[in-house]
Image: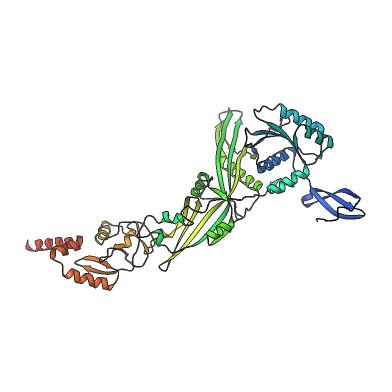
Length: 505
């Protein structure tokens, strides 16, 4: 509840502190502020009691990474010399600043803690500038604040920590981070929203991108997480080392609500190779480009995805090893890394862009479905390369013998693997595309009017073209007819000569 009142009015203000158990028996401290004799409002400040000191350090590392600090490293769990976290603060005007962080998961931080941190900062070996920071779930005493101000040590107390957590989308109560992402792999090809389609149909004869009707386009922005992991573990027995794991790999998953699930390998390669093609998400701009735009939501928190990725990394690196003991007996052991053996070196989130374009052409539907990253793309589905005459595409689909292939050539099969019929607009494979005899244009066998002339099959747009050619053929000389019929007439002539030879014998 927010209060507004006349600042000139004087009130006696006091507060009382109480505690109760919230969900899961978690302790929640409450401060009740009282103005005069009236209770006005209560602020409940959930504590991080469920986290150990080490877990708090890990949580702070996540918070600081979200704030933009770089190379955030949590120190070893022992002998950290007062340097729980060491990180870099980017500096546009010179070398980066080293920041030394002391984490205190306590109610009160006093002056000696600040003094110890000041000493740790001064003794830290770094060529550039350096400074200290103390982070606590509680508060810092006044003497501690005075000393910190004197030696330029930044203080993040419990209240400020919660403010920062809100800014970075982190539920500081349980140390889990909600994913906030405002970047998307550029969905707009330099040649336009359907620029990828131009390349997709480039190998289809008699079809140009400019000839296509305006499509209906849909852009789906898919929440995606990209993590670089390192698994390192040595397994030993009384005979020595039996197995070593030292693997680094990148995992990319669809982080939608029905996930997580891995994206196709080709899409993963597109994301990794062209991750620099990210742009700020501007749904107004994208809505003006595409007919429909939808944005998915991350189904889990960053922490939950990291836990899932860690489990996947463990499964990936688990091996069953056979070895011989000192007693010459063969043993078998499952070498399974633990979660502490898995380091998530880098974790990023981005929206990948999946585009679908539907075309209605000559009464038939065609669709291209692809992932886009600027001028690069990966096609998932492309029905332009589905033969509309037969169920299977491809050169000589359904023609399985030499006779069939020779026959297809004799009938004027078009040279391209896929061709758009000039008569009906079907896109057909090589088996079903011929040359229209009168115009020379490609025509499919499904719509062509046919006629056999001296054994050679001819294809026409319509009966008028067929009649026109019949008149033309009748006026041809014998040599012209032989040239016209090519293989068919020659074959028929050879057969006739052979039969005549046999009769005469």
